[in-house]
Length: 125
Image 1 (tube, rainbow, N blue to C red):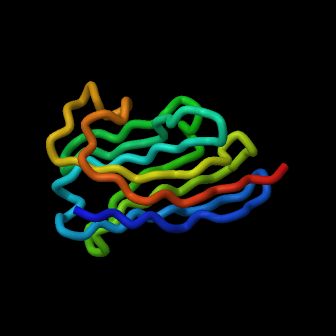
Image 2: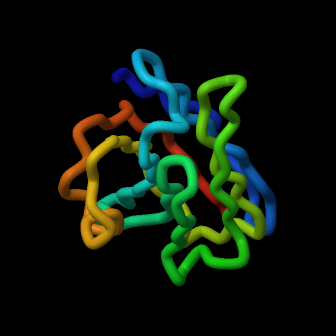
């Protein structure tokens, strides 16, 4: 499975961006897909995840109500709609995927077998 993240850029506080993670080699419906981010000087943190078909959707508390993760099966893509962005959202965003990851590992980052290359999001104040 290869993952290609895109959609990052520079936006003002309060603005919106939509990130995409295109998968090849496997349909996204059969994968648990997640977004993580890493800000300069900080550890990688969980943002959102959508379990493979029929499963749940999970968000970090810091993005709940502002970010929405969804799956576009026709395009074999997972999207992250980010609204009401703040400078604290500035980071490199990575998508991750796995078909076997267990629920307790979804937020930790361990257990994902596939990672995209990252797309940079910068939110100016």
